[in-house]
Structure formats: structure tokens, C-alpha cells
Image (tube, rainbow, N blue to C red):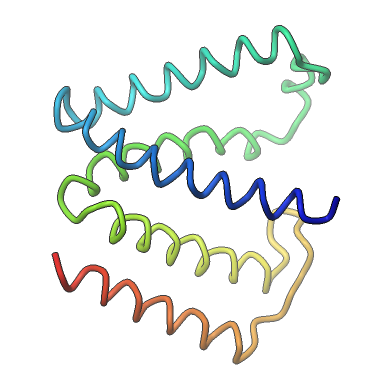
Length: 145
């Protein structure tokens, strides 16, 4: 059963690559902001139906959580907007490589300082080397564009 979570993460990554390509095309046809709204609206409706039929939590307790925990939706909206904007200009691979670089740089900072209630994992030379190699991969993917 331990393999199921990494497998789901890989499938999520596949979905993100497909989503980036689809949303990039959507944005070219109807506009960047408009494509973002359409994409988020469809996703919101899908999640609403899933919550209605399968939800087990207590959505009313959203009023009791720290307000900063509500910013995830804003960050997700910014991500969708950014992808819709950049994919038609630099391609899916370069766009997602840049996203991955940003994700891993920020996640290394979050881990190092234990931000947002996460476990603290110190930054070391291996993580630094991994980030340098990621920047190299971004350069190589983007250089061809």
C-alpha cells in the first residue's frame, strides 16, 4: 500500500501537464483571464458535486480556521492564470519545468524553516545541488524556445 501515494502523485503530475496544455489552448482562444475563470469554474463545479455526494467533512468549520489557510484558492488561481499565460509562449515542458523549479525552491524554504506547520527539514548541500540541477534543466528546456 505504500506505493499508492507516490503513484497518485505521479498521476497528479500527468494531470497537471495535460491541464497546462489544455488551459494554454483555452487561453489562446478566449483570453488569459477568461480561460482562468472558465477553468476554475468547471473545477469548482466538479468539486461541489463530489462534496455533495461523497463529502465526509464539515465545510461549516471553515469559519473557525485561521484566515491565512484560505489563501490556497488564491494561489491556485494565480497558478492557473500563470500557466495559461506562459504555456502558449514557451511551451508545456519549459512552463512546467519553471513551475517545478518554483515549487521546489519554495518547498525547500518551507521545509528548512518548518513554515505553515510543516516538519522542519534542514537545507543541505544535496538539496542545494538538486536545485542547481533544476535550474540547469530549466535553462536547457527554455533555451530551445
